[in-house]
Amino acid sequence: MDSKSPSQTRVTALTTASIIEQKRQVFFTRIIYTTLTATGLSVFVTLYNKTYGAAVVDGCIFLINLFCLILNKQDYYKAARLLAITTLITALTGLITLYPIETGLYIFYLPISVAGFALFAPEEKKYKIILTILTIIFSIVVVVFKIDMGIKLPISTQDMERSYTFNFLVAMIFTWVSIDFLMKANAEAEIRLEELAQTLEKKNQQLEDTNKDLDRIIYSTTHDLRSPLASVKGLTDLATAETENTTLQEYFSMIKTQINKLDTFILDMLELSKQSKDEVKSSWINLSETVNEILDNLKFMDGFNQIKFDLSLNPHQIFIDKRKFTAIINNLVCNAVKYHDYSKESPYIKVTATYANGVLKMVISDNGLGISKENIKNIFNMFYRGSEQSTGSGLGLAIVTHTLEKLNGKIAVESEEGRGTTFTVTFSTSVK
Image 1 (cartoon, rainbow, N blue to C red):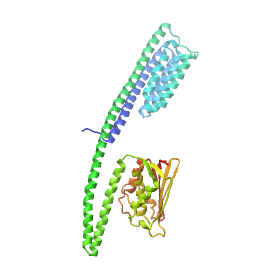
Image 2: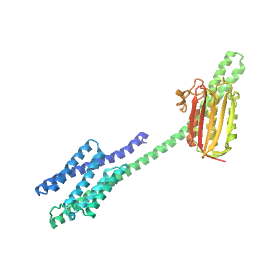
Image 3: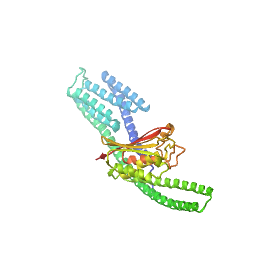
């Protein structure tokens, strides 16, 4: 099946914009060349007719557009377009003051304004607004108020009628060309956006299928791995009981320790997968009871009974996903126990909860080993172990951060090596 990678999808989006921009470039270049041709011919005609004022205006337009063409080729696209359109508006106003209003030169304000819209991208809205305001101001000044500079070139009534007809037709052609460009650009953008939407839909479906496959693999793998591990652990216990050889018993104990570490790693991987996939299901829970349940489940950890726990939990009831909340606090307290400094006279772990302005703040602090400045920036990375005493999977804090994302929570850490660590977790929740 033909499919696009995420990078290809991004390229498609960029290509859509770049193709339309390239067409703007072609459109702008055609405008410049048309203007150069028209003004160049007009210079000769006006000089032949000895209308030197008009020749000067046409000559200025020619030179400025030539400069715009150079700017455009030097990749100063916005500057070239702004200068070109502004020049056309200003020059048109100058020509209108030279010729009678009946020649219909003012009609060219319309194609110039539409061309200004066509030459700038949607995100360049400010330029479109500037050009529109400029066009409106000049058209009001010369058409509505009929500003007379005191210089009017003589022209017969018949020539005025012909000029009006010619100017009207040319202005409408230019207007239609600009509108046609806008319509084609919009149609092409819609087609490419539809293609992009279909591609994204396919990729989303593929991702969903992949996630489902990964879930099945994780559940199957954890079951298939834990079953033989449990058997090996049981056989190790039997072998330990069957022998009185202290060396063998020590070896069996080391094997059991490694089995437990592998089992913990598998359980952590399973927990990480569950927390990443499970939807948030909030309910009212008793904060004190929940924290005490967590401590009760950790009481068999090595060194747990040597630590003094200081709990200060207020409020009593909070509205939150109990499973996710438990996973967060469990991992933080577990780490505090695991990396404590039992050589200190009074090892402690403090768990406090306060509530203010719709935010629950949980603080877990200890006077344990602490974390060095070099390691603290990496502790939330998956599989990272920052201490030689690290015996875990390196997934505990990764589980915390993934779970907090689901709850729209935040976590901060302060630590000093040798003095202890403080984790502060905040949740937006309700209490009663």
